Image (cartoon, rainbow, N blue to C red):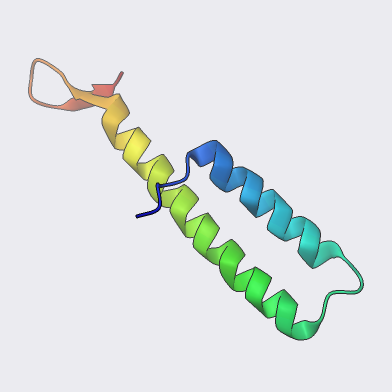
Length: 68
């Protein structure tokens, strides 16, 4: 079972994918593959950020949520 990438590792892989897409000699097939991989990485980043945002919220005395 593969371990889950950290947010920093995910950003690094996304930067690598962007670099590949910026190359002039990339084939159309390869660009589609890299694009799909990049979209999965973006989704993963969004999920990780959402999770962290939820963990940062805490309940106040009135039962409402406030920023930590």
